[in-house]
Image (cartoon, rainbow, N blue to C red; front, side, top):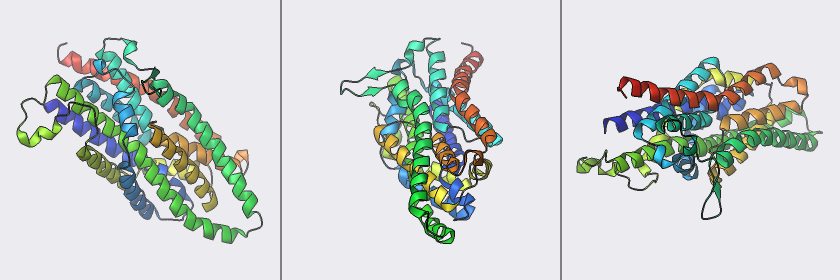
Length: 355
């Protein structure tokens, strides 16, 4: 029971960090275009993150039971997965790099599972066809979207921006800024909702996994009746888990992540309201589709490349590719580094336990 409480605390710490680490996803463009003040944007993002987090559980199911064989999972595995993700998130936040909290959690889980199974890579569910005919596993749900979603974000963002250029080519800049200043509030709200609907569910899945693992191991057998709600014989996301994660992420978002907001909103490309609207609308739509089909997408990757695609329509040199290259390196390193951190954390804990 003590270990579960530690896992629950670590999960909520991760969710809070996820909130302020990824706050830039929803508000960087609306702040950089000066449509909203930072405090107004954070309040709006926190509210819509909260609403979005309560919307569906498909992503939570993928994280909890779709990526790693249940035989390789213990309460300690879950804890070490969270430790790896937290360390990487704090490190990239300190550097001001918008890395993926989703991939950090997945990488940590995979590394910790391999360590738990003493190096058996077969515990990773690479690609599995279910009885319903649907395909699940790391390849279709994580790795393939990791490459395709940024590309889609860049291309769709650019296409939408070109379309808006064609429609608005005879409209005065003052009128365009006035119209899209208001529309950008709506697109930023949608982005906040989409972010909550995808990112908050990842921690829900981890807590649900810890509950299921604790029940299977008998950790909750002697609980008093008042705590019987923790007993979960089947993997499912309880309402109290959803509410707790939603509130925690909203609180983290409200705290802000100014280092990353500065990178995404100012350092990559200079934006006007129409560009912010195009980038946010593109990213929100892609993330919304991913949440519906249970893909734990990197919201950071999608909004970043949407901003790049929109900025590139001005001219390729408008995008500061030096900053972009640093961001891409963070993306590439997230999965292997967090897998190593999860793997190492479990071995370190076992060493001090005398195993």
